[in-house]
Length: 184
Image (cartoon, rainbow, N blue to C red; front, side, top):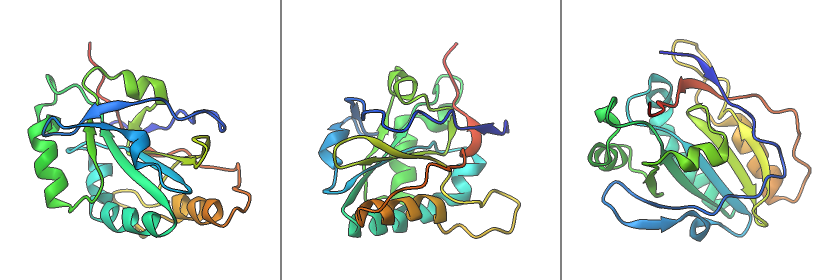
């Protein structure tokens, strides 16, 4: 497993226009999930140990974000030819297993990952209600094998500040995870 950090897309970047299918083939425009206060976008996949480490926290995280007026979507951009465990049919099962209340979308062309400059799974982005990037980076300090709790501290601190119209610190730590499996 390669330990790859986030690229840290510049703050203030506008949310890319994205329409992707979920694992069942239903199309979603991610802007439709924009809440009053914003949208969290997560790049995840089915097999990465870093994602598996936090997978059970993603549904409760989404519910906490929803209470703050922030919508949520997840995107998988991995090459499924070389990593069939990340293919759409397995995405449906993964979402059901972890009780995802948000769309889990498939970026077959990897154009969306490139637009976000996503580098790893998991990789987190928080946009405000005007679709401007206000946070990008890690969920929290927890990683497979360390004793830090999976509590969403970093992302939720930014989300609470966003919902309360308070400044969000620009001191943000990159996420760390498996590299996105790019097509050759």
